[in-house]
Amino acid sequence: MARESIRQIVKANPDFLVVNGDLVDTAWKEDFELAKKILAEEVGDKLPIYYIPGNHEIMGSGSLDNFINVFEKNRFTFDHKGTRFILLDTSTGGLRTSDFDQLIELKKSLDEAAADPKINNVVVVGHHPTRSPLPTKNSQLSDQKEADLLEGKLFYKEQKEASFLPTRMLPFYYR
Image 1 (cartoon, rainbow, N blue to C red):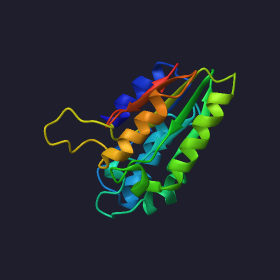
Image 2 (cartoon, rainbow, N blue to C red):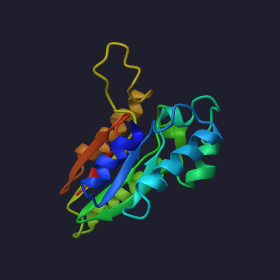
Image 3 (cartoon, rainbow, N blue to C red):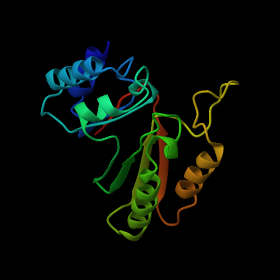
Image 4 (spheres, one colour):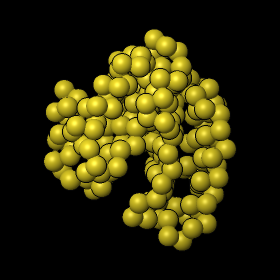
């Protein structure tokens, strides 16, 4: 199923691909090696791939070590066609518990985008949504103060359009 989804995405000729976690079932080294192989075979150098971890990227091992050993980075910031993309690690269900430094980088990147006339929009991507419609609330960020902070930083930033795109179990691409 992953291969077919990736093939369909590549066929759409996007500018880049974001894999927003849960490409693997468990966080063992072999799972990440297979994921890297599939991405290399199906995408190759046709477009940039940004892979950020979800909860399955730490499932079993309890850490991102195997993910980092294969994919090297757990978060990204880049600009594309007037939009700043900020891709965050929410693998543990929270921003601080996944990688505290990303909160500092998020603030800096949002402030820079607000001051940069070439940046018209900001899209922040994370695996877990800030709020969950489910009664169990088990798929949202685990710390609601953190969710409030993220929503406040994004939706009350002057001058720029901002979006938070939680895409649990869903890769997306941009054209």
